[in-house]
Length: 160
Image (cartoon, rainbow, N blue to C red; front, side, top):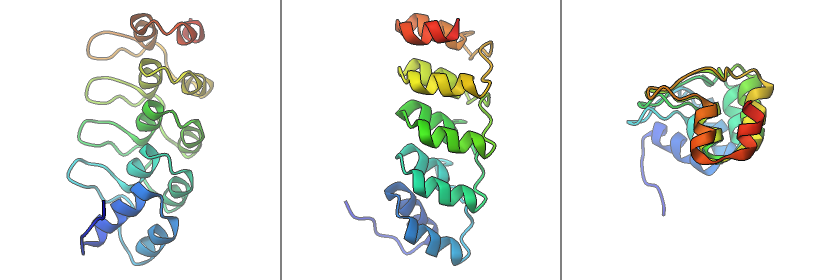
């Protein structure tokens, strides 16, 4: 599927989704705001991270992308990588200031996403960086409760 747009912002979003670091750099050098948002509140960093493009995420972070930017649902790049399972990008984001305890509109955290989707390597990473296991979502559930609900034995052991 090709992407057709003359808007520089749309070209940046497309390049981020594809992980095209050369084009991302060109677009940023032309003056596009690294923290521009699309209609869903996604930033180039959120898109690059979600699609697993470590080099693109590094470039965007080095260009001062907001590592705690939230989309319209309150989800962050860190939550996206915990959903998808990209530990290397998670470490990059956290080391550049991503808040491991930031909550989305449903009260979910990156740790809860990692637990819910069985990304136990990410559960370990979140705990390594001090994720608060006592945070509750809007249903009153902690990450431990999510592990129990999902039957995620490894996460259950890690969270206890």
